[in-house]
Amino acid sequence: MADATQSNENQGTPTSELPVSILAQYVRDLSFENPHAPDSLKMGAQQPNMDVSIGLDARKMPDNDGLYEVVLSARAEAVSGEKTMFLCEVQYGIMCQIDPSVDADTHHPLVFIEVPRQAFPFVRQIIASTVANGGFPPLYLAPVDFHQLYMDRFAKDIEKSKEIAEA
Image 1 (cartoon, rainbow, N blue to C red):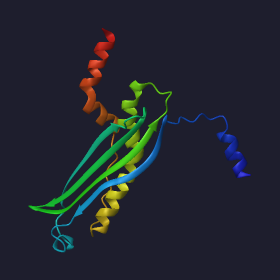
Image 2: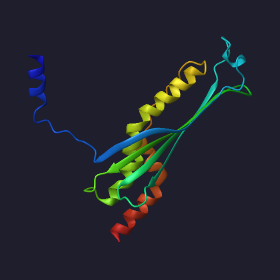
Image 3: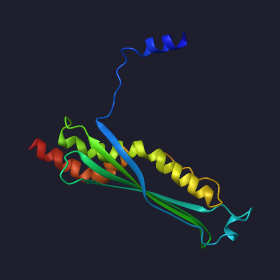
Image 4: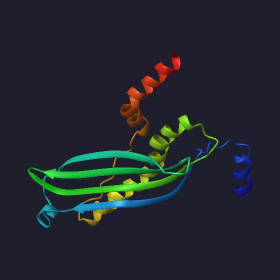
């Protein structure tokens, strides 16, 4: 009975699916360094300073409109005093296809905002489990605002486009 009620509640509810299909997700490169083990794993060591960075790159695949490879990079380094406790880096690839009905001007934000937004939880889990397998507590990266990263990175280009459109 609960199933019938649930399906009735969902009938007629519009779903907003993105016009992009994720065709493949894969680790392109993964590196973990624990240069001072086992000393770095001793209990009571001071809390390390964390430096985390996120990078993003994309390329259109040749001979196929709407097919892209997006590479989401994450780097996490823990430093205590002068010593690196660990360094974890991952490059995570996403192969995606944008629906042919989508205007070409919309491809860029889809590729740089929506695709990495969908892939980030996987990168976050890879970092957490890799750091934990290195003997440290799991490192859970904070959520990333890919829209803001996009605006920061391409703000000048967006302004130029607006000026050209208004002229």
